[in-house]
Image (cartoon, rainbow, N blue to C red; front, side, top):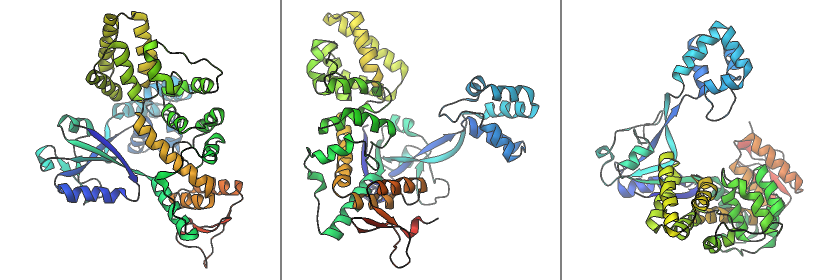
Length: 432
């Protein structure tokens, strides 16, 4: 069955789920469970509590395990000599680590998937067991995770709540309420230099997908001047494709000649400086170079998306064999698969997805360029429960000569409030 992703404002996501329940039946719609497993540090802390080790000592010991996703206890012992030493010399720590290793990776708790919703053709109980999630007697979640449900042929829809859509909506309301201007955000001019200056200057606090320090650096080097550049950067700034960003920048500015791995790929890669950026391009490459049908190209795309090594190895063999039949050399076919196709396995965006994300980025950059105070007010309302973000955004306001006035019982409202083009009043809800 198809897996359909749709993004809504985070304030509206609950209404969408409720609509789907009303339309298809409460017994035919459910959210998907997730299984939280014990990572290395969590296993150590749980065992430490069970063994009665004082909290401070257990916490200090757990900190010897690097705070890196996916790290195992065995890897941590190899990497950190201090951890190895204390495990070898302290009998209690040795007992702690031995028991933690037995628990590591086991399921610790049940959660609810951030966005996935299953829609069944008949009551969900015909397909899988159900339950209420912890501390919620109204919601229904499956007891199977996403992959087994996919195997049952059920429709999965990802209703993702994007705070940036809420920020855009709130900023538009602030502008209309204070200036009487109604902006048609979906029909902005797509060649606005002031908007491109926001990206080129790395002035991207609050800009969807473009806030990280690495992204800002690349934007300042790229100096984007077309919407295509924004789409490309959304797609390239991901594991795998990220390695090609410096090459894209050099070629964009004429500092490096655009090269194509084979003449049959020139038309496919022309818009992206000779670099494969999108899933569609990967599908076109295997069609043009190896004679794959569109259906075969889609099977390859799905194998890449699932990141299953056996499937990828099988597809690699098929690709090389098909390329050899057409008359290409094994060396060139292997190069195209391993250096162009494989780096994008599981990380490549399709262009339509990237274009939608780039559009949200462009819209937020437009509001920041023309209505900075209104935009920052909307941004602060969205982040009012996150003190670190509020501090960052207050500094951003100062850099633009916008005052964030202290809370005032006569003027402050629940949320941050737009006063005028130079002033924002601190919201009462953000006070700790």
